[in-house]
Image (cartoon, rainbow, N blue to C red):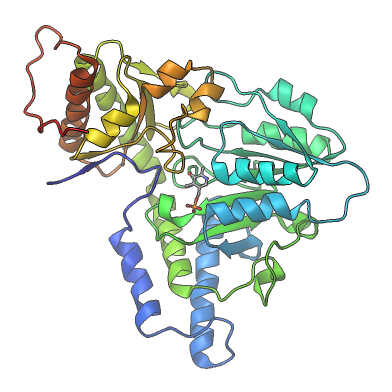
Length: 396
Ligand SMILES: *Cc1c(COP(=O)(O)O)cnc(C)c1O
């Protein structure tokens, strides 16, 4: 059975061109990029070229790119690394309540160590309340952090304005760009970010590799969180050439395709919304589509348990939110942070729209979702809508 994949915020399929670029470095060019011989030098050139591709996507210099195992590690280095100095005066960090666990859990670990953690306020749109943020920052603030694009509702943060507030207070701004790369224009200079996390597998690259952009002028404010031999001494360990090459190629493709994909996804989102509203009257969109990327559509289907819906579908892959939190009985903390009642949060599902998906597949997938949702909620078919041929209901 073919799967309609609506879970691209959790991960994506490796692009064929990315895979092709990687294969030579698994088969023949397996030298260590730190080795002095010709094989090592060829691997080094491939790693350097990948750093250039990553840098070009985000408007950085290649020397500001540190390769990591993914956005989780990048967030850890950026957020733990600024608190690694011995602190005489009390210090604090400012966190965004709708962020990915790989930032929020670092905050919890820091709090356990005695660092004060402060929490931004977010509007119902998911965007950070800038006035409130300004009041949280003071001379003790080492860093504030937020995801540029939220992974559950797609809200885009005003990172340029956030950076200005942070810098006024002498703090750094770290941005988790895992969902932003390839979707919104990312220009680390124009937006004056200090550090930025990227992940390859969110942009059709391989799992297990990512990058941390570290602005040249602030490198001295970060300490490594792991010790060993290399890479600007901020992240040691043998550089996995094939993965890094895959990340580089994925960044090149993301840069080439971003604008065309954005336009296509706008059409996909409008279509998905049409099918949802026709098939499930009462459906509501979470967040604010006007300040969100079109790739993420998070909706409340009143009367339906989101978890039951996603786990009962065989031919459609979608989720209730972040993959890291699914399985927990708690309502999504992202949705509750933007003001949803627990009942609505528990009745929400997230559809991630893949720019390359054929419209027919999207329509078939969303029709399957609404049919099942109606069955679960005991809602009758709206008048005039013919039942689609849907799959059997699998007992839970
Ligand atoms: C997926 C994701 C991460 C984690 O990235 P990994 O590379 O899987 O560690 C972090 N932040 C956001 C916003 C994400 O979507």
